[in-house]
Length: 173
Image (tube, rainbow, N blue to C red; front, side):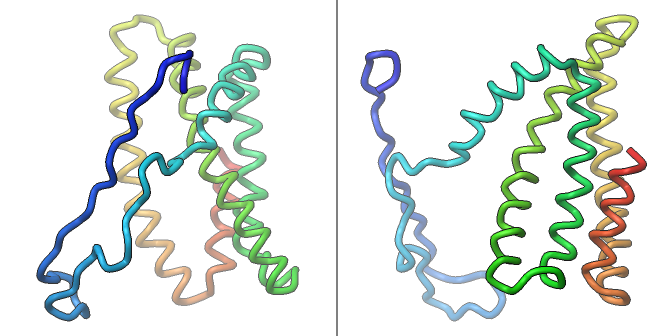
C-alpha cells in the first residue's frame, strides 16, 4: 500500500533460454532452473531511504560540503576494500568489505549534489545539459583508462595497491 491505495504486483518474469550462448555452459542450459526473482522483491530499497536524506543534507549543509564529505568517505571505503583482509580476520574482513560495498553504492547517489552544485555556479541555464553530458563522457573515458591501468596494477602489484591508488585519487579530488 502506498498512500492508501493498493499497488498491483508485477508477475515474476521467467527467462527462457533453451540454448546457452555463453562460453563454458552446456547446450540445453535453462536459466529458469535456478529459480526466479519473486514478485515484489525489494530492489535497491536502501535508495528509497538514503536519497531523501541526502537531499535534506544537501539543502542543510550545501553541495560543496557533501561532495567533500563524499571524498573523505571514499578514501576510507577504498582503504577498507584494499586492506580489510590484511588487518582483520577473514570473517570480520568480509563484514568490513560488505559495509564498504553498501557505502560505495550509496555514494553513487551523490551525483545529485554535483548536478545541483552545477546549477548554482553555471552562468547560463543553457550550459547545464551540455556540461553534465560532457562530464558523463569524460567519466566514461576515464573509467576505461583507469580500468586498464588498474588491471595492470592488480596483476603486477596486487589488489591492495589498486585500492590504495583509488584512495589517493579520492584525496586528490
